Length: 386
Image 1 (cartoon, rainbow, N blue to C red):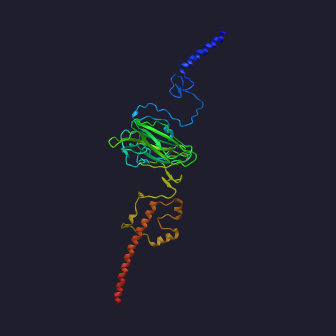
Image 2 (cartoon, rainbow, N blue to C red):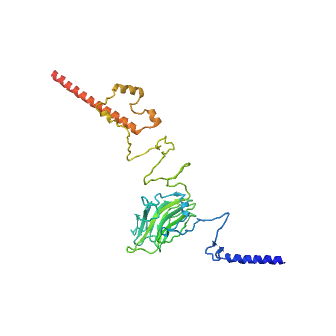
Image 3 (tube, rainbow, N blue to C red):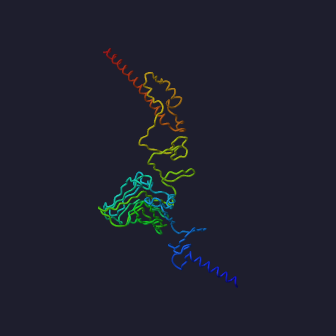
């Protein structure tokens, strides 16, 4: 009996102690290691679980930043960029990155300009300045970075913007199919500082999806004297259900599907193959047609202007005739078999053709001189007959 009473007392004090740091109400927030839970489940401490099921996009909290002027960093965003980026110039290095004004009334009250500003949270030094000077639609207008949605896809629109306090970032899109959804994974409030904003569009499995990428601000209507000015430092849409990107990556073992555009200078230490993986040892190998506005081949040897030197001796035509009968091609030029095997060397071929043309020019000059002499002789003979 004594042991039983001791056991009951231990259980009682243990429960009393447990109740002091945990909150388990019938309704409301549940707290573990806290008596004032602020969320549906509020855990004050480290958790350990063997399995965690989340039925929608996971969003990480934004930790304190030593430089709040440039906003906070959400570790979710680098993971989103493993998908296919639909707009290549994300930081506006050379363009507006496909962005146009979003204002359905088209009254000129919303304008977008690419500007160079100091202390931007990007590497390009450029941003977009969006300015509103009057009523627009929807709300105060904004920008449109369009993309065509497809069924059974998940798109994430990520952008970094400085939005004035008192305004809210809102998104819009056309139909995203039956069963689709659209939701934000960040705060939408303007803070007057650089913040990262992102929303998800999950298209349905049937229907006809439209276009997406509409971003606008809700808040007080601006005027010419009191305009609404906000900035975007980067913006792009990612198809997180597709692979491939508009970036160049180190892809040693598999093809990287996507587009490439280089706006600056570049250096390639190895060989480049276009349409082929075998460049035959050349720096650039192209399997297919190519078009150039202008191509310059630099000659590092002598050019055949030596043909016009006084001490140059033209090869006898009899030698050329013998060579052509034997080799079936002109001297200095590659044979059909050589071109089929090795391709045509543009520089050496043009050099050989130039030499042949210059030789032919000298022969024509000599022939013309001989012809003039013959004409004079004919005239003299005709004069004697008369």
